[in-house]
Each structure stands twice: as C-alpha cells, then as structure tokens.
Image (cartoon, rainbow, N blue to C red):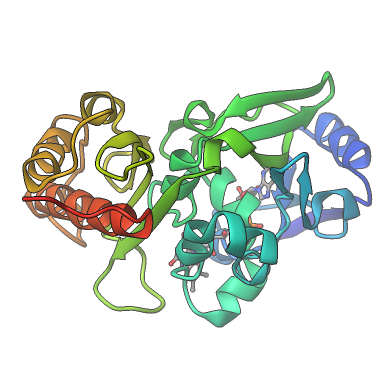
Length: 294
Ligand SMILES: Cc1cc2nc3c(=O)[nH]c(=O)nc-3n(C[C@H](O)[C@H](O)[C@H](O)COP(=O)(O)OP(=O)(O)OC[C@H]3O[C@@H](n4cnc5c(N)ncnc54)[C@H](O)[C@@H]3O)c2cc1C
C-alpha cells in the first residue's frame, strides 16, 4: 500500500539538512496529512522519507523581543490554543481552526500547510496579512524571506536542495495595533477545502475614523495565495465609510485571478472576492474599534 524505500528520523535541523543534501529525492514528512495521502495514491513511488517530527528546535511558539516565533512543527491545535497567538494575533487562531476537523488539526502542522504550496491552505492568506517572514535553513546556513515571495506556483515553493522551513516570524511592528479577521467560504463548515478564503488585517487612526493601514489576502484568489497591494495602497489614510468599503470590494477584482474548478466557477469566485473582502474588512474594522460611517 505504501511504497517506501527508506525512512530517516532526524533529531536536529543540521541532521535534517545533511540528509536532504545527501539524498536528492528525499521527501520531508511532518504531520503527514498531505504526504501520506500522496503515498497512498501512488504519487511518491519508492519514497525516501525524512521524518522531521522529532526535531525539538522546530517545535513550539515563543516571543523574542515581542516578535512571535512560530516553529513549523506547531500543529493547528497548538496554535489555536496558544496564549501568545490568542492574545496577539487571534486571527491566526481563527484561521487554523477552520482547517479540516479535530483529527487533522491535531496532526497537521503549519509548516506543512505553507510548504505544500497550495492556494487553499487556510493559514496562508492570514500569514500574508501578518507580513510573516520565513526562516529557511539549508547547507549554506539560514535565509529569511517574506511569505509572499516563498510561493512560486501551484505546489511550488522557494525551497532549494537541502533546505527546510525552520521558523515563521511575525514581527512586533507587523501585528501591534492591527486587528484582523479570516473567513473561509466552503460548502460546509467542517472537513472542506476553501472555495475561497479572505483575510483582512487593519490598523486604524487614533480617532478610529481612518484606515491607517490595511492588508488584504486571499486564498484561492489565484493559483497561489496573494495580497491586494494596489487596493491596500489606494485605501491607506482614507475615511472609513460605506463608499470606501464598496471601492475596496471593486478594486480587489483587479488583483485576484481565480479559475473555474469542479468546486466553483471563476465568476462565482470573483463574486466571492468582492463580497468577502467587504464583509471581512467590516469585521476587522469593528474589531479595531472603528465604525462604518455613512
Ligand atoms: C481530511 C483532510 C482535511 C483537510 N482539510 C484542510 C483544510 O480545511 N484546510 C487546509 O488548509 N488544509 C487541509 N488539509 C491539508 C493538510 O492538513 C495541511 O496542508 C497540513 O497543514 C499539512 O501539514 P503536515 O504537517 O501534515 O504536512 P506533511 O503532509 O507532512 O507535508 C506537507 C508538505 O510540506 C512539506 N513540509 C512539511 N514540513 C516542512 C518543513 N518544515 N520544511 C519544508 N517542507 C516541509 C512536505 O515535504 C510536503 O511536501 C486537510 C487534509 C486532510 C487529510
């Protein structure tokens, strides 16, 4: 049933990097909720697996100088229940709580959710709006990259030979005084992949009447998760009112590029992008203490 040639259990990051460097065809396995399905479907014949689940340096969530460091082996359940996350970036807890069902959330890791390179990954659009940085470790040491630059194409991410994701960093200035919301549109509430997911993270002016900054992210808004930077720039500093919300809803249509799939048509996904961006923005503004003036 599972056609596995070799499986190696790494205990440290350097151990993992060495194995990946020495075994070009090695496939990393963390929680296995994607990889085991691929194996079962015969997509990884004669697999060489690198199990990273026991690497202690890649587990846990911590604060360093108020920057939030999420280690990639953190499961969705651990993230949702973590105090640092709940107090500082509750929108991420909200996003990961929409993944699958409890069993998947107990086993699936945020690192695997990012590294599979899939546009519907529920953590991705929220991490985009938190300006998450990824630490990648490989044979030449570590390098940091903004999450938006990590996604190259469908199921293709910026990991070179011998590299793995070792940290997700959310800097204090990226989340302090920001309030956000994630909404997943799917056909049912549990065990369903997003037809579209929308995350909005915003910071209001001191008097709560203007959008000082806003970040808008989509999953399934295109082949890879994306940010609507042009819309964000147009909205910055504007007075919060219904007109602005409508403008933003129309403007995101210039930046998303969904496709028709067996789950939904392109036209329906465009309708969703306009509607979700408005509703999710409204909720984010309210969470930030703002009101929508007519
Ligand atoms: C029934 C079911 C329902 C699901 N529902 C949802 C859903 O609603 N929303 C959603 O977003 N996802 C869903 N998923 C998908 C899945 O749970 C996630 O993508 C999960 O986060 C993958 O994490 P993992 O630890 O299981 O990854 P694995 O399967 O171990 O790995 C996934 C990929 O990432 C790579 N990888 C893992 N960790 C690293 C690392 N640190 N560095 C480099 N590469 C790495 C692996 O090589 C592989 O390519 C569902 C899956 C199942 C089985």
